[in-house]
Image (cartoon, rainbow, N blue to C red; front, side, top):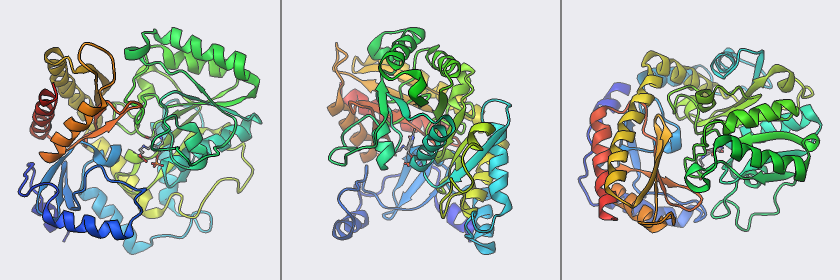
Length: 445
Ligand code: PLZ
């Protein structure tokens, strides 16, 4: 049964109707009557099945996936090993609640996390359902362990949509507007954003440290929380030396350094975690998305003394570390190793950078090309300036989706196109999608 589903989906992008097609349009009509308009869709094609890097919609269109459901399906769609593991687990048992009666797969995920996350110190993990929930718990743990209230976050940061994580997230629209009041004791300092601030990494870190010391006081800070490469904020890669300087400062002041690797982690950048590119070892790491290949699972992993400082029963939740999600994570991690997907991520990054840099040389619309591995982006500007160009970004994304390539935007100013293909994408598929994106950008120039 499983194989017949897979064999139906081809490996090539193929648009056979207008997009969205008639069946998708019908579903969209139905949707309007039952789904809150507060939840939106980037692209209203309704998906029926998927395989590898291709999504097939209800009208039979085959779309090339450059988004991986926002950096989730890194191992690709319909991975046989994952299907097998999940199917067997569903038949065995779907839920007991780990806090009521435990099961082995939860331990195995924590063993993998201890091994894969940076540093060879003694580690513990706790499992949750979503990225926001992992971030909330990392903050709870850091506050409990230090007895301090303040949490420091950065400009352009994204950490989630729950009340605490909205406070941690920078951008007002659409994430925060009208949803306050927000959780207190959250302080925001400037990020290193080389394209826009021109600072070296150490200088940008010095600026942030000065603010923390003078306006908050290190003795009041429980944790410094940072995405090593910012995701929703615009795929901002801090200047070299920024992360190590902050991590050193945090260590010297007993401030917990939390790396939010929810988008940048799990092989996306060519290493298991993006902090590894600069040799940084965080005290706590939050993971989700790519961890479980599409099943909802998230984790906080880090120093045993911090993770165990919480009183018994202080962490948990009904579904955290659900057995179906847990075996999906194990299958996904195994697939990443077996298929050498970290090296694939680097290879994908090389292809994308080369193609995008050619475009940058050709088109003044392209302000910057940046990212690492299979987490690459272009920042679009008004030609001849650094003025963010959100309208061109929107139009280029529309061109891509009209032509069956699912591409996503991001950025505080809405002017960044990000590429997050599944790591199993073939070179042919990648070039095909990049051809469409190139044409999309040329049309905006
Ligand atoms: N931390 C770094 O990227 C989720 C958000 C999509 P959840 N990013 C996609 C949207 O508009 O809601 C994310 C992230 C980083 C935390 C999160 C939150 O993860 O699983 O969406 O809660």
